[in-house]
Length: 393
Image (cartoon, rainbow, N blue to C red; front, side, top):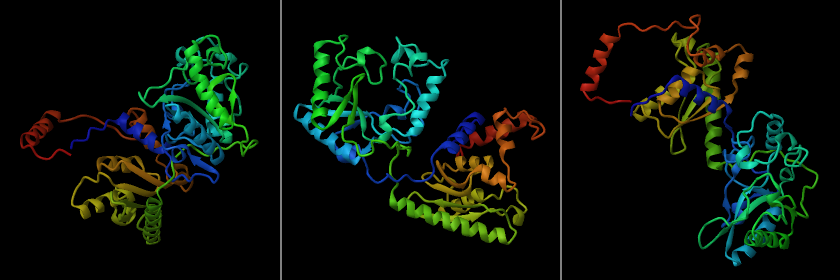
């Protein structure tokens, strides 16, 4: 399969890898996933995507899942059962919200120039008044883990019930008791309200979708762990093995003066550590003999193919641009790393100038001069290969 990777795509990949979470998440004690407690609950976690009042993914939402305290989840199950008897499932928009997400909201609200989603979520509200009107605050009950935003879905049709306004719409039409909706829409809101109140939740007058457990277990504590999914214990065991073996191999060649403190392991699609390798730049007199490149070469030899699709690579340090490119060409789509770029920089290794060279359009001749020459002759070679219908990789 031919791989077309432009420089700007590579830069985006580098950015995504540098910002993605790399270690497994463990749900804190006292909390539960909504769908583990309520099998019929539907999720539309708005802050995991861009369909929200900010228009982009919110900090702290690392998975499209919903988390509540165990007490709130149990109470919500009571409400869900009451509603199911009436022909409705619940759909959850948001539940536990980390403090970092609240901080994201606060920073956005202070940026008055960013009004990308105004027409959809706050058309009649001046953004400068969001704090004053209570739409944005420094703290949120969601961060205590016992508040949930939800609506109803008809079991028979699978459609959301008409509540008169959408989730997170800033305006009086979203208030309980508003006169801006039809009697049918008000009745729909009351179906949700009555079930939630019966289960022990309190309403929030300004938002028909917002309910907080009255007897919440953490009334004064605000949490900041991410909204994420728990790790598979088997995968963690394999990753632990990869870490140990990569470090051991790197330490061995490092002490033999063959290369730096860099090791890598390729994990096969079946969850086994296929091979480990280390940096041997000094010993091999090869500037490309980085741990990740060596590991990819070894894995290809073991598997008898250039295509390592489905594999994961672990590296003791964040891969340099060359290694990331090799990883992409090997069709590996997951990288897990130990030390961060700043950790390598602290001991004297720096890759920043290469990233800057790429991001600046490869214009700095002080790093590398790039010129085209002999294209016509080389095109003939390319045509020959194409006519032979050989493998495109």
